[in-house]
Image 1 (spheres, rainbow, N blue to C red):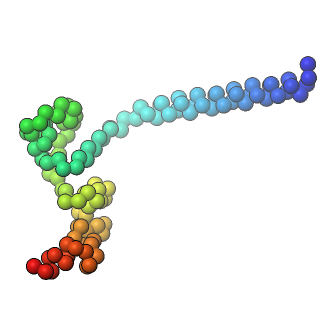
Image 2 (cartoon, one colour):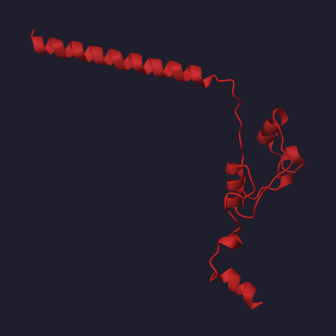
Image 3 (cartoon, helix red, strand yellow):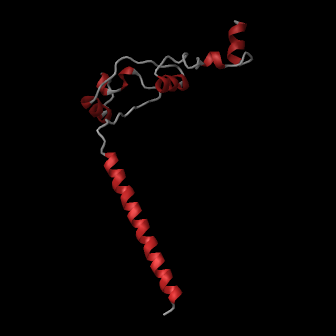
Length: 123
């Protein structure tokens, strides 16, 4: 048998063992870390959903999955929202009113030559 071939096989075996042990260690460490005591907080952002569109808030439409989440969790009854989505996202991410981080409303961000401003000036 060729000596170089035996060396290559041993090196390949060592490399495979090292990779397997490393992967197994990372999987076990990741699994142990996944069992944190921190709670999971699902945040559901829905477009064009009103206050009474969910069954848990008294809506006529049956929404069994959100209702089940609301039954075991906390329901917030004071909301801040905006006509467009990006000020609402700003409020969610910053925890403040949308004007505090510098995000205004849609009308404030339009250039003065936009059609909406021309229409309001003409009337």
